[in-house]
Structures are given as C-alpha cells and as structure tokens.
Length: 71
Image (cartoon, rainbow, N blue to C red; front, side):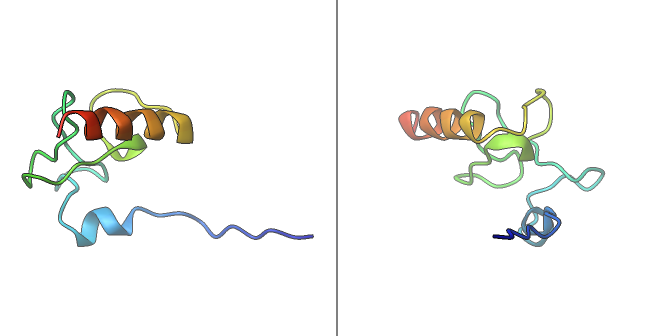
C-alpha cells in the first residue's frame, strides 16, 4: 500500500483574507481564537500567529473545544 500526501499549503488562509499581510499566519484573539481581521471567524491549530502551537491534531482538537465552549 502506498499513501501519497501532497505538499500542504495554507492557500485557504490567503484566499479567505485571514492571514496577515506580512505573514502566512492568522492573527487571532488568543482567548476566543476569533480572527483579528474578521469577526465571528475562528482560527485554530498551527495557522495562528503569536503563541507557539505544535503541529498536532490533538492541540487543534483542544483549541476547537475551547472555541466552541466560548461561543
């Protein structure tokens, strides 16, 4: 069995105008994970800027639960 995984890129962040102009990452309120550029849009996982977040599904899952509990 062969599982090919293409290179992953953050195109959605750019097309959705979520990423900062000078960065590939999204600025967020680190209490609610709400986008600094767009209200009612939440960004979780290693797409956020500021705090060092490991590339881990477990971390993104936990951030999602925190985000859901505050909305």
